[in-house]
Length: 144
Image (cartoon, rainbow, N blue to C red; front, side, top):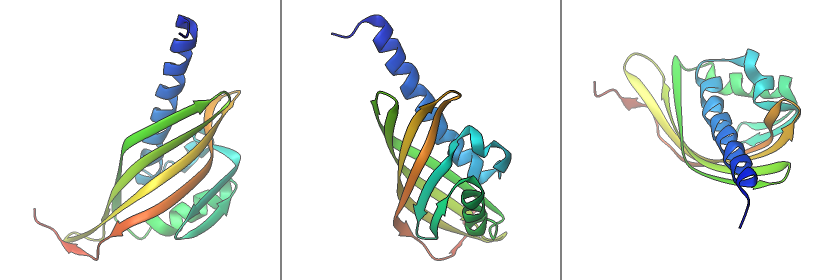
């Protein structure tokens, strides 16, 4: 059985990693590009249908190229599975996103985000992200 200090450390790591996932959604939805280094390492590698980005400047450009055409987006992450292994961690999350196209239409997307993280002097940061799409709708008329 693990001692109390080990259990507290493990819970703190898991909480910090879950918070990073939530902040990733806010980073995208609110255009918080000035906070990129609080989430990702300088050498981050991201792969998605839109392409691959290596490093923070390329990541910001990739995110903007995919989201700037919408009036607003709202990403929601769920079903987090966090596996900490010393100074690295793997996090898997389901992502459902609403893309507001205009005042009358939206589109919906769903995917799986697989993050790899490493512990840095400033806390946990993601150094890899792979986005695997599951579903994407065409433009949908607004019900409200």
